[in-house]
Image: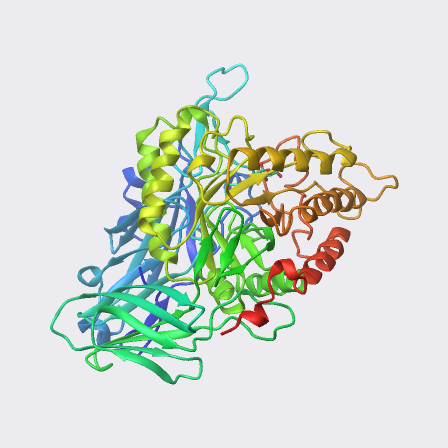
Length: 609
Ligand code: BDP
């Protein structure tokens, strides 16, 4: 599914702004459907409040019932469409809405989507009113169930001596707040009736002979006899290569490759543009950014453009105060500035696919992304649920469809910390990983494991072993002196069993900013520094061998459900939730920046073609 981009053939109308909003807190949570709230303006169904789109609705109001609401939330707004658009194909696109979404246009269902983090769209020509207002209504359900990703359960509390009649709670299986809402852009965009529906690009590089190949495949809907032109443009807009066919190979001599950025090279990630034109740009035009690069994994190395890549990175969350997981350009810009300030060359989209605008920045700024699915916290009792597996396969297909052309995406992570030691996890992950590899033979596939070398049953399917480790935190709390030994032992055991590269995809310590103690104790800034430095010293013994990366948990503090082990959220950030550095950020900054110049990171400057 192509990201909406305006061009000579396409226009975009944005529905971002303030919408009307109300929750359906009727006992059945079904009053909205019973009374057909979608058939008239929401304000005529009862009291509505203003709600920002995009945003999570949870932290925008002062009302606990809205913050902690479970069930159907309703949105609506009005819009107009110019008559000039009558002859165009009109597509209504939601970049994401969490979790189950039904969209109505002028009282009729336009589209529904299952899943909280990926785009969906529908052609709406025959539903639009060109002579007056259009009413767009959204019913959104945030309930997590055994067939959602992440999975969850609802517990009904039947004991009326303790709970009121009909009382229920949402149980989460993941460690972050279940923010809900219309999280990303909502847009109406036009295309011609014969249009470019999809483009798939893959690239290979022959380093020795200084040649790259760009393979492209274009789907056109409508008149197949329409003239097609494909052009590859360099950054200055100069045509490098052209072709008149809907699929083929473009040969690029002396290519400028897409590299993860290096501090001193001064060469930012290089993006070409694949310009696709129907009827010589008269009908439709789409410009797709293309980074030429190739990713390979050996038994010891993660190679980008045949050069060993060491990931010095962080795990993130889409999380901020007020907006929750809502798209926020200032936050995106700030986060990328902080990533660069820290010297981060890689992040994982823990634990769900992030906004496309975030991946745009990773593509443009040269930061490697491990693109993770929302398959977080899948328990042994979930694996036999065929509906969950089917949904997981569908989510991987949707993720691939959305992110397949992104040079920054160098590996897929299909899940985080599943019960991968249970017998029934094997078939589940064989399917999910097999399916992902089938979709995309050009990128490695993995998941993060918190199980151990002796009991994990699914690491056999991955290309890179990703492990989450909390020595000195969840085990041996307070004992930083055992971390190095435990890391070393653990690494050696994994190596004995598997001939695959290893990446530590989580390690860290909870830290309340401003809390100090010497000698350190858990939760102080001193303790976070000690924990991280012990891991760093352990990692340094294996970099250049089989260790291909380290991701700190976490880039910034983030919100979680309330529970006795979390103090207003998870505090393992090296930045606060407001993106101010804790003392440990200085340690990380020094380490990561020095890594840009070290030989084990590969000197990219020598490898530019
Ligand atoms: C890991 C999870 C992550 C948690 C983290 C923690 O992958 O989502 O937030 O631990 O406990 O188990 O801080």
